Length: 578
Image 1 (spheres, rainbow, N blue to C red):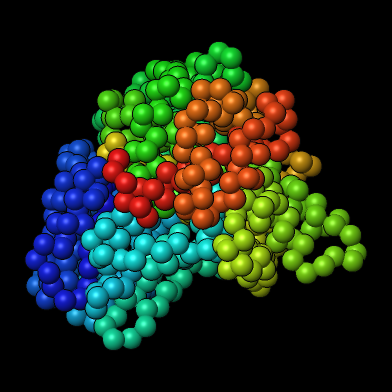
Image 2 (cartoon, rainbow, N blue to C red):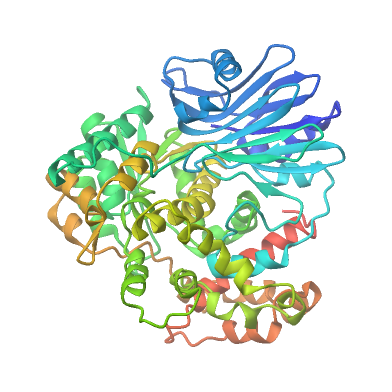
């Protein structure tokens, strides 16, 4: 539901309008709150009248202002004026009570305060320039309006190649920062900024002695509530249905709560490529949804690829962004709401955690410092093992692998809380991958079509349950998401519950030797790479010329990351037109 923009500092009449123009794909700049200290703006399409939440908007009472992007499900029956009054009486304690998918901005004479929801469903970026703090839901509204120097961070290049996204508070650009999930950022006059976490997932719980059956009941009740709170009253309801257990559980819950209103959407890449359509159809039939299958192929999306990457803004090298974007375009013709199954892996023990646990328990006696961090980086299966051969020597000299890669992971694994190693992995997965890859990707791709992505599994109550429950209800004997599967066994076909996770396999390995080969060769030409001075042309040429039968090199995903970055660089750094 829209986006936020704003600044805190010396007023300028046309500044907010200029920022809003860069985010016009999010909707028109319909609400502006002006104070003597700065301005807040909310961009959005008209909100359906039957929406039951406190949705985005802005309000000011002279000296103070408040703006919201996304929605709040709690406190119930509140309004922006009441929320501003509550902040004035409760201060930062208010933020612990907020539920939903939101970005909140509060402006007073003393400071601009930005609050991101606990799991990072909404993004916020900020910068200080020319005696002002700027912030926006997307970086382009800041760097294009504040005339910032668009200088790359060398360490971010190694991070991008290792993760396919930029983890933490820094971004690809030197002068722009990102607000972390579950944090409040205070940007005051004349004193340094500060960021405060309002979360504690390791707090004592009253349900430590629950039986397994009670944990399953608690999970089911929390998931039911998360779906119910996000359910529009009368509109058709869309759901992205892959056929995996996460989106299937969400679909099953939707079909119970809103029978006859559910439209499910599944993707495929053509008959010659593997797909999950059999399982999506099985769930759609079982749950009585109105089912549609959408074909994704390069000849359709390549003319829009620059637009897609421009919309992502902070570069994300995950090829699933394209299906997210194309699927959102189909859904937008039907309804402004679309559910998804994101959250099951990060919160309830996705299979990638198993290798980390095995290394943690059985990795040998004489293990050097950083072995867990390096194993975690390798588990992404991007380009961690060869970022040094991809980047040019001048870039490599600026990067310290321990500081810029291993310590990013170690900061989470070495904390005293949460207590168990699996919960440390859960925190790492949600705060890094969830908040910097999964949720921003989905929100940006759906927001480009002015629809709202609803992620009930990425709900704060479910996160709290996950951190409180025994590890054996998340991972046991190599089987993941035990509690979710037990809760939805009665409502889904047995094959869906029992099948191992396969993931959404975008066939980039084939595309780059077939439909996308000429396009990619042109973008990643030696001349272009020499001029940019970032990627080594010789190594990129070797990757481009991979053998189609060689599956071990992960060449497709690496080329997707390189292609995405180079298009992003041209649009953002060079200022090329779309």
